[in-house]
Image (tube, rainbow, N blue to C red; front, side):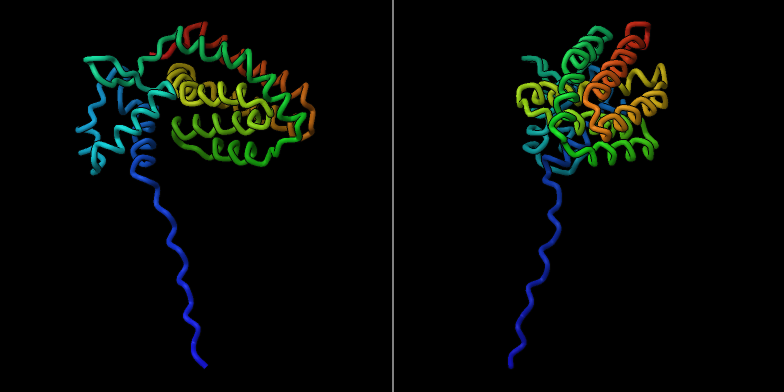
Length: 220
């Protein structure tokens, strides 16, 4: 008998260079390490990340689409300067759309396990950036099953901008503990398949943050 050669397990794929550049630059923006209005030079970022300019360029294109950077002709790429008016507009849009998306998702019996996992990550987070991204994942998990690709696409497009608004506002008004309790209430309603209550609590939650923004919790 001959020994049958065994196939070694496939190595775990590493994140692509573009994904690594995207994650690093996004973390830099949300943490404030890359300051509001700061120029983002492809060559400098590529040198810092020890990679070519191509993945950095692709990452910046993605960040432009998500609203974290702006590209100005003859000037270049800069970190977006989020004003109070910008933050209010973001949350007003969420207030109009997200409660209904959450209601539809709960009615469709969407899986709530990803939302609970995100809530746990937010509770364990020690940095505002990680907490804000976990919170964005929590909300997304609740409206992702709304079965309306246009509605979901609009909310998805606001995720990074919402994270930026939340982090900069927490720097002035650290309200995340109260928001965590509100998240738990929303999740409990979703897990109980109470679509109307989940929608009402989501509306109240977003409206509360919007009120704080209007009362002076403006991003720097």
